[in-house]
Amino acid sequence: MEAHDLGKGTLSELAEWFGVSLAWAWKISSARKRTGLAERKPYQAGPKVRVDREAVRRLLESTPDLYLRELQAELKVSTGTQVSLPHLRKIFQNTIPAPTCF
Image 1 (tube, rainbow, N blue to C red):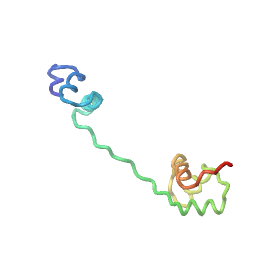
Image 2: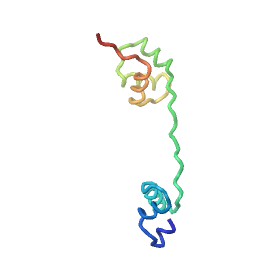
Image 3: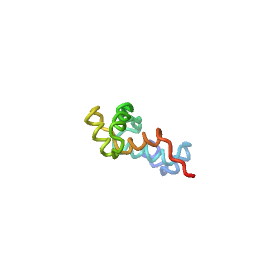
Image 4: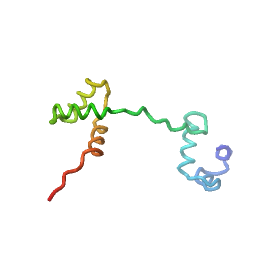
């Protein structure tokens, strides 16, 4: 970055010179413009949602024709856990076998 500040070349030229990708050079340059620091902030994953699969099973046994949105609401009431619809879909994709056609 110091070389870029001193006008020693473009980001593209300097990335090639230092053996880094142009995308990485752009990210570092952009981060430095925003924060004043050349270091990128480490990735921090968000909180993991712990779905009580047993609660899902019980709800579906008691009312097997629930729509996902209704199941989502029932889970929030019964367990206090907010689960997104895409997450519920993923649970079903991973646990329920697809029907076979003959």
